Amino acid sequence: MKNYHETDPEFMERFEHFAFEEVVNEPDQQLDEVTRHMAILATLLGCQGMDAFRAELPRALDAGVTPVMAKEIVYQSVDYLGIGRVLPFLDITNEVLTSRGVKLPLEGQSTTTMENRLEKGTQTQADIFGEHMLEAWKTGHINRWLASNCFGDYYTRTGLTLAQREMITFCFLAAQGGCEPQLTGHAKGNMNLGNDKDFLIRVISQCLPYIGYPRSLNAVSCVNKAAEG
Image 1: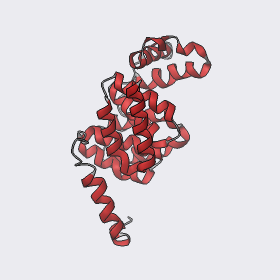
Image 2 (image 1 turned 30 degrees about the vertical axis):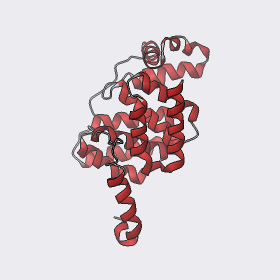
Image 3 (image 1 turned 45 degrees about the vertical axis):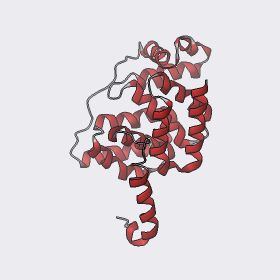
Image 4 (image 1 turned 45 degrees about the horizontal axis):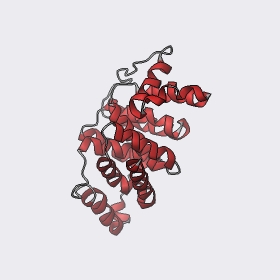
């Protein structure tokens, strides 16, 4: 077990004060504990912070994030990060849950079948982004996959609300960087579901210690752009 308080005491003093006191308690930038920990888990997936994720998951579970919610965050991240980056986090999640006495597999959350996943996914896209999305899947096979796989297989699952799913997607995109067009689009999707500009700025603020200032400031710019559109 690494003890950074012994090897790096000055650094830990400043980092822990900033991340766990200053940021968490900043006036007008606070989130409820479940939402804050959900956002941090999604952010750590996005930035590939495996060691930090392993430390954060027990804190999130203690704060009220359920095992189902934690698993749903990991599952949905595959569509935005790819299985090559997510698989280690699935392993960590299973290890942490098992160590806490949680029996796996968890109860199923799927609401679609192989036959209706495209239809249900397309409707979910429309519910978030507008009726024009009902025809978007017809413009190419990747857009068809997006509708049936990303939205039909994952967004339609129970365990998280649609607004929570859009929030974690925003975190996946902000944390990995280089996805500013998609980040702006999903900032708008969040706003359409009631996750307004103020809320998204709070999410960015609470996740800043985990992804740094450049990606956080880029995310703020995308939120501002979405709010103007």
